[in-house]
Image (cartoon, rainbow, N blue to C red):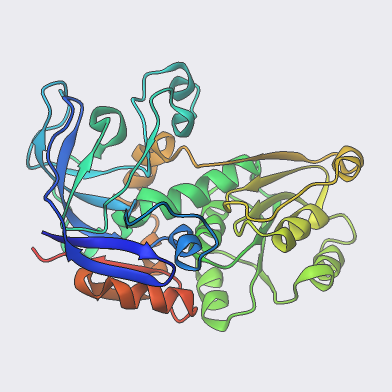
Length: 340
C-alpha cells in the first residue's frame, strides 16, 4: 500500500510501504475512514523537532476494524472505532486515575496517514460505535480522536466552570476545540485570542463571546481591561511557545488555572513569578481515551460538530500539499480522505 512518510524537514512523501500486520495478540488492524494532519506534525516538518530517519506519519484516526489479535475480546471486524493518539491498556493505575496518556504500557500512535493502520493495545485504546455512522459524520468522529479530545482536556485542566470566564490562547485547531469545550461546559464568557478572520469566525461559531487580536503584552493588557483588571479563572494554552505561555500566565487571575496542551518548544518558567502569581497549572498529552465515549456520544446526538475545524479536505495521496497548506497557514486543519 501507499502511506505517508516524512524523510526530513519539508520532505513528506506518499510512498509504498508494507501493509500493517498483527504483531502482538493485543493489536488490531483498521481500515481508515479518514485521517488528518495535526499541528504537532508541523514541528518536524519545520525542522524544529529532531527526527531519526524516515518516519511513518499520522496519529489521528477513525475507521473499521478488519482484524484483531487473539487477546482482543471486546472488538470485532466490521465495527467502526475511534482511538486516541496515546495508546493505553485502560486498566493500569494511571489509566484508572483518568490519565491514560501516562499508561504504564503507553505507546504513541504512528502510521495513521494511510489506508490501513495497526493499533497496539486495541482493547484499551479503541471505542466502537453501536452502528456504522454515515459519511457526513466521519469528519466529526475523526476530530474526536485528538484535536477535540485535546481541547477538551485543556478545558478540564483549566478547571472551566459554569458561568466562569475563560481565555483561549491559540487559534489553531486545538484552541478552537478548547473554545467549543468551554462552551459545552457552560462558561459564561469565552475570550479567544486570534488575529485571523477565518479563525475568529469559527471561534464565534463555537462559542467565543469576545475576540482579542493583540498579542504579547498588548494582548495581556486588553484582556485585563476586559475583565476589570481581575483576569480569567480559566486559561487554555494551545500553542506551546514562550510568548503564548507568557500570555497565559499574564491573563490568569490568582487562584486560577492554566491548562496547557500545546507541546512546549522553548518554554521556560520563572520560579519566583510562579510562586507569587499563585496559579494552578496542569497539562501534557491529553488523556483522550477518558473522554472518548462522552465526546463520541455528543457527536452522534448532534450536540457538537467539531469536524467544522477541517477547512481543507484532500485525497490521501495529496498529503504533501496538506502539510504545505497548514505550514503556510492557508488551512487550519487538513482532513485526508481515504478511498472506500
